[in-house]
Image (tube, rainbow, N blue to C red; front, side, top):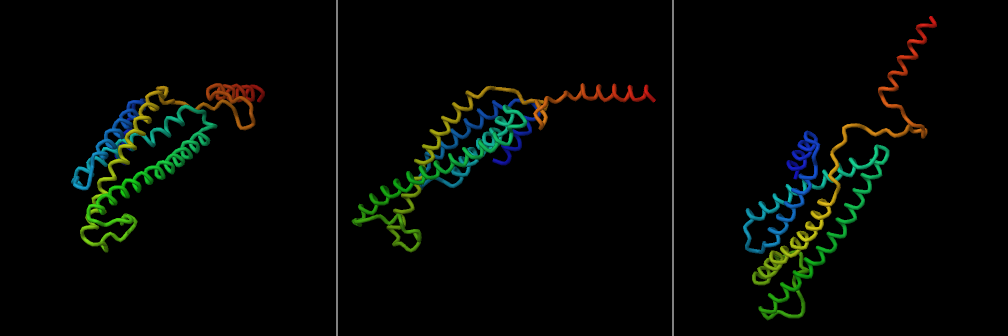
Length: 214
């Protein structure tokens, strides 16, 4: 994530083009979440690490560059408000996502563990609420671990669907090049500011007039 964020930021600064990195980041997110959606309790940790790496690359290209795009589309006076809106909706969406996906995971774990315990002849509840899994009997411990491993893939499939929405939204963003100047439309007192070149010429004229008087 760090490498993708810094690397894409450097390339955007150099070439002034950002949309290709945003679309690429969204595509990597979809691919990474879709691959993580295939994992179960038997998946090797090496494969899980590779899938997480893909998600990290996509996140690095997308999240911070989105702030850059928002700041690039507003005037200098509104950069603070625009950045705070991005942070607010990112936090708001993250809270909703954690709640929804956490609920999906808990429900899936309960269903899988209940089915596994029923095959052992254990009924009347689920051991999924026991946080100390090591204290459980070996057959029950195995069922709970398998339930968590198999249930995790589903939340990543839901995240992949959300990433598809993000890709569509990014694709619809206007592809404005990065601006090279600061648009100071007005001064703090509400009057129009003079361009830098005009102000310098006016100062030169005043100095010339003062010299003539002397």
